[in-house]
Amino acid sequence: MRRFARFGLFLLFLLSACAPQFDSLAEPTDLPAPTSFPAPAHAEEIRFALIGKMPQVNVWELYDGSGSTYANRALFGSLHPRLYQLSPLDSSLQPLAADGFPSEVVQDGEGYSATVKLRAGLKWTDGAPFTAEDVSFTANTALAFEFGYDWGAFYPRDYLVRAEAVDSSTVKFIFKQKPNVGIWQYGVLQAPIVQKAFWDSAVRESTDQLPGESLRVEIADFRADLEIAQATLADLTAKVISLKVNGLQDRKIQGDHLRMEREVLYLKETLENLLEDYAEQVKLAQEALHHLDDSGEPTLGAWMTGATQDDVWANPVNPAFPFGTPNFDRASYRFFGDEESALTAFQTSEVDFILSPLTNPPHGANLNPSSSARFLVFNPANIFLADPALRSALSCLIDRGKLSADILQNKAMPLEAFVLSPQWHDANQKSPCAGMDQSARVTYALGMLKNAGYSWGQETAAQAAGQNLTLPNGEAFPKVSLLAPSKDADPLRYAAAKYVAEQAQSLGIHLAVREATLDEVVYDVYSSGKYDMAMMGWRLAEYPAYLCEWFGGQTPLLYPSDRLKVVCEALEAETKLEAARQAVAQIESALSSELPFLPLFTVAQADAYQNLSYPTPSILNGWAGLYGAPSYATPAQ
Image (tube, rainbow, N blue to C red; front, side, top):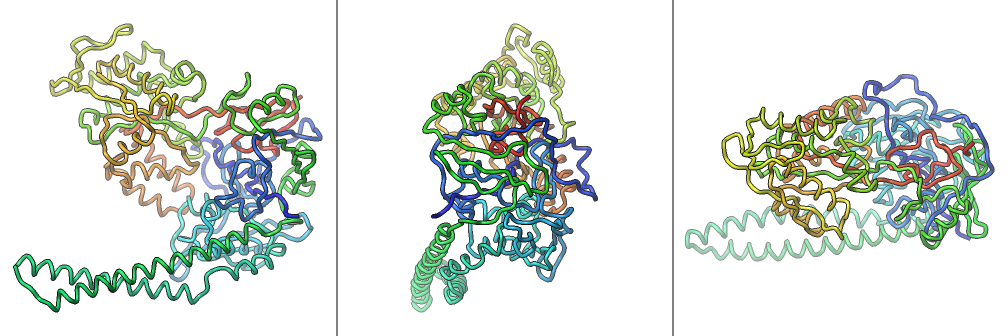
């Protein structure tokens, strides 16, 4: 009988936790073992609630698109090893199966390479040693089957050529191009690993369904022929156009042009058909891997493969796990058909933690910031909104605490920065208005605008909005609008837009909220450019490469500036964590002064748990974002 899937994140997406202060980020030479916590108490079981149906996938499908669900990750979140993990408490990169940090990425022939040493004495649950062969087998299998989704992110084919076992305790990764921090430390080094001995023979059978070498060669040949034909056609097209412009005719050139058009069309259609055949064969091979039986698969994590009984899945603790034993003998997962049933079980103390997101969290749920961040975006083409002094004044008047608690009814958490994780955020970057009351905010904002040359017909006061704001050049400030999703589309962004408009109007800015659908908001910001300000939302990654997507020249409609282009190019090629942090700090410092966006809030993540204690009550994305983190929980005293 086919068994339920494994998820191997060992709290990896753990990825979204908080981090140490910026001044303690230097890479150490002696690395501690992954953080473990002494157990003040012990219990037989930690009981989780999930809404939906119990999943059934193996590890290969788990990290592919069809199997990557929250329930899968929750049930199987500690079964497969990683070389490194991010600490859920401070987001620092910690060695797990690795012994210390990896070597530097160095030039190796026409490509690049780096090695990782493995910890001694690690064993799978069947007693077999964990070796470099397991690491290389996993990476090379993911590459051979051309997986996308999580497998593709962990082992990116655009960068990684293959992995090799140098010896039983050393694995070498070979790259076709130099990997940056996002590819290396936040990708390959945190990938799940399976046991080669268990999967090797079954994977070989599925490999037979992959496209053969003859098809690959045929595709390469047609691509080369098409490239030559397109160049020839372009040359003939230029000649035909020249003849027409000069009122001349040349039957040979025109005939050659017509024949080459047909040749290019033939090559394109043939290549498309070959690529369709190739994609279909890859898909069939991937599906064959998805359906392999994983019964009896050895694992290496804090918890072992569980079983189901009375619609409850239970993972027993792995007593041989080398990095500390959890405070429970087993982690059980009970599935409910809807939120109401799960809440009823929670209220009657049948479960300790409701993992699935809740529409109506119970009273007393812990609120956490999440990766779903919301920003006020200025149209860079609007010259009247380009002044950083104006943006700073508006930012000062926006009380993020009031916005989150009062306006958004605690469904949001204040956001003051462009980077969520303190591992990457410079804690010294703070708003000058942080902690001020409303009167102080008004005074400070007015001072900034006066110093920049603005004036009013009637100046803003504590209880009275300013009137007739005048630009430094003496012109009246024009009416502007704020593009935002409608109340039905996104009630939080809609309410925030109304609040921002009120604060703008108190400065004498005539700002009207313009409602639209979510698609219309995205289209206007990224395509048409028909907006003055916009309420935008993104889910931000732990590693802040998105800063260069926004502000490094990749998306000119958002921020058409070359100021950050050089540092972003350096960040794109950087392999060292500390140098990458310095680059991110430089970017964030520039953004804090220019304010092309105003950070506003993150959507609150509610943790609904009882009878449990965690090392800290609030982390980025909550403990539910870490699937309940059973290895870090303790029974409440």
